[in-house]
Length: 320
Image (cartoon, rainbow, N blue to C red; front, side):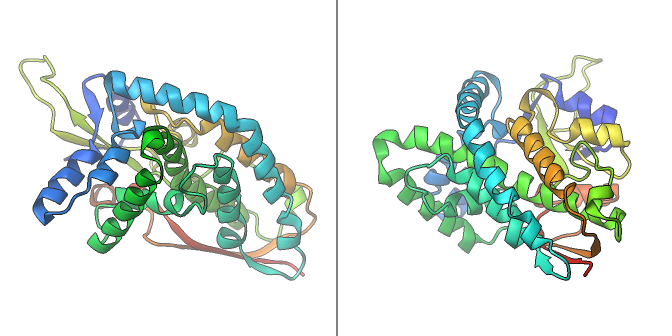
């Protein structure tokens, strides 16, 4: 594996037809063969997630998901606003709160519940499924998620593909939005400690990202002097070495796999900032706990096992 750790090189690879996404389903086929385990439910879902697909299949499912998301947008906006309207009590003078568990996660759950995917009414699958992308996830956890998927498919086999696609819409949004919103709030707060929230100049776009890398696989000879590219290239999407403009451009990915949830995510950020800008209180402290430290060096980016930076908590204390 090689690392595309400059913005220009990462963009070149991600926009090139010579590369395709890593086929996550194939990894579960190999793991299943090694362990003697039937991962067909997980494989079936992974083969319906555009982020791991290329070509006509990618285009067809992406269009179907885009239509589904467009139909849900107004309902998701209403659901998000209901949760965002609860921010003032959470940030009342003298109060301490974990904004991850008390605000960001409930916000995502409210938005995801709008899709009302039969067989996942509790939202447990939508919450746990992004863990399948973590290469160091324990086998026991993979098996548990696989069995939940088996039950989900068996809930109504005739409609299973449509329900899996609807589930996929939630799966692809969960970790990026939860992590990015949590980390961005922390960055805003720590940059403006002691400043009234209604006096801050807020960034128009998320200043942080929970998705730091994505992998691409070379498909053919490059055609230049018979040279061949490395089999796998890891593309950096958010880096302390990028300019602010570059991080902003790459925030939702680049090329034909740009995140389908870009529009609603930006709207949520705007709504959160609008609410914060009405509050006269200031943040005294903001402490972000992460499962793993954000990558800083080339060695860090190459060592990543989980493409998502996942927060554990965001504890803030409001000035009394």
